[in-house]
Amino acid sequence: MIVVEGLRKQYRSGEQPVVDHVNLEVKQGEFTAIMGPSGSGKSTLLNLMGGLDLPDQGTVYVDGLPLHTLSEKRRTLMRRRKIGYIFQNYQLLSMLNVRENIAFPMSVDRCPKEEIQLRVQELVKELGLKGKEEAVPDELSGGQQQRVAIARALAMQPKVILADEPTGNLDRKRSQEVMEILLHLHRKERMTIVMVTHDLSVAGYAERILLYKDGRIESDIRQKEGDMPRVLEDFLAQLQT
Ligand SMILES: Nc1ncnc2c1ncn2[C@@H]1O[C@H](COP(=O)(O)OP(=O)(O)OP(=O)(O)O)[C@@H](O)[C@H]1O
Image (cartoon, rainbow, N blue to C red):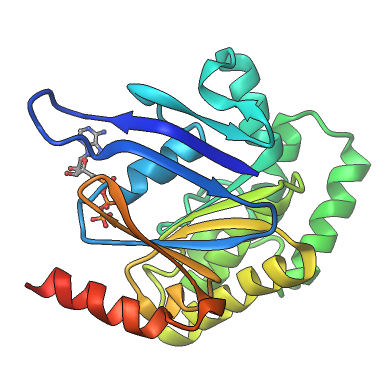
């Protein structure tokens, strides 16, 4: 579903690239977490994978399409239709209510009104936001705001969800709620999810964890191999030294 080939990104010449010739394949329906030290380039990698940023070298294929060689217009359309984004700070539009925030990508894409209404109703129900449709983001808790952001990310029925620290501003209980929603999308709807997180308990929801350091993927661990706890312990020990 996502293929990353020879991806490189350096913000300042003379400094170590934050993405240093990274190759990666994420299969359809896979739930992957990216962990690593602060400033190692995880968000940059995720942004490149979603076409939010341009690489110096290499490319990313999403569903077979080379994201960075598409025209700006086609890349924008592709991002809107195939990828849903979730951010730590929710990035909701403060002037719009819950219904309008969820509908936003469909409105921009000029979907028919009735279709938008039906989809929003469906998502409001699915994400447990009934009764909050008219509220603006400031009137919602962090967990509720993130659920609106997830609903918005799902509005266009994307193939891929890219989540950057989706639980970073939430307490444990709200984090668990958000992770249960992502797990449901992965298990029941075979959604491809790539998530950056600092939180080991959050990363544990994923079936695959990439350990990222100094612009490179240091380890690529799969849950079913049963060695996740040991490799993570080793990695965390490395970070502390
Ligand atoms: N737009 C930018 N311009 C210049 N430097 C940037 C830019 N974005 C990020 N950086 C730098 O690139 C490095 C990697 O940043 P990035 O946010 O990708 O790391 P991260 O691993 O996600 O960090 P964190 O876990 O703290 O969020 C950092 O040193 C950061 O200061």
